[in-house]
Length: 396
Ligand SMILES: *Cc1c(COP(=O)(O)O)cnc(C)c1O
Image 1: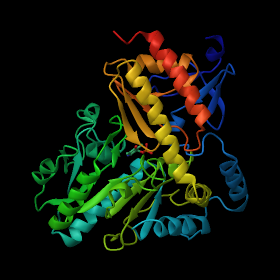
Image 2 (image 1 turned 180 degrees about the horizontal axis):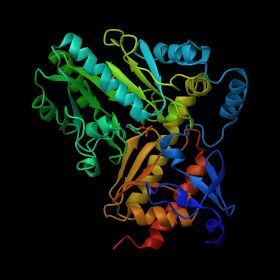
Image 3 (image 1 turned 90 degrees about the vertical axis):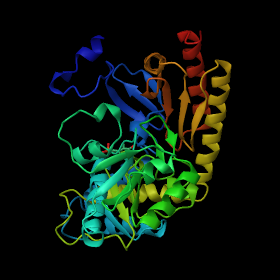
């Protein structure tokens, strides 16, 4: 890899094994590396770039806002933050928004808000029930909240007070509830676990149970929010109204922006309890506003649903052709079960063939394209994947 050797990557901490290429530019569903090779991107910054790479609306908004005001300080109001918070509130069952810079930070805020609420209203109840294989971030508290097996023995001692239930098993939640419990925290679809959905019935039962027990329901919509599953928020499929929601990833469409969103009744932070230097800065919240306008435009979410159906139908056909394990997911958050632990190999072969995919589990491929992906691009992805699967001889 001559061209790659020109990049002195040694100074970067080795936090993940990266392929030997360097991305230089992107446009829509496509990325170009340092040799000018083109890749069809079904990872999109880890389900982040809802409008694809470098959309004009983000470039223009950043340029315009950067000339106006970048950071006045979180201790002052700014117009883009006020407007984006209002848009989120108008289009949800929530009343209050706190902006953050990453999903983990938003979840950290949700945990703090729940614990404060428990201190004020439930005699210091502070335990939070989360789920096996869940993923809530990489700060110490959010790693403790996560049910990712690889996190279990890392960076001990972790933050206490998190207990793991089993998704779609209400009894496993009931068994963990005590008068120390303040909240249940759940991803409507577990993304990093391999696109495992909480059923609509389970979410409704969970809402009933938490109401009855006086326990808060927190939905981590960092991966499922902003239209990813075909509704603006993932919990809307179940028709429930949670107490707290967290957003990240597609909220900024590629720039660092996240949010902690809550009902009026549970918002109990007093001045000084929560904050952060870059939180709610106008440069990022202006982008969030532009993304929100795009996603809420008439027809946008219908289009996401149609393309999600199209993608799933294509993958179902491929799964049947090679007797794989079937397709899961909703909207444009989709997984293909390979039925054998060959996903890493398929990802490597696909990349060589000019297609970027993700393997959240050893036997699972995840598809998280831009919400603006075209039907032709889905066809191209399916063609490349078909060839890669055929050539890899994973079929025995
Ligand atoms: C990505 C993700 C997070 C963490 O967000 P970061 O921005 O990486 O901190 C948390 N929860 C879910 C469901 C996610 O998909």
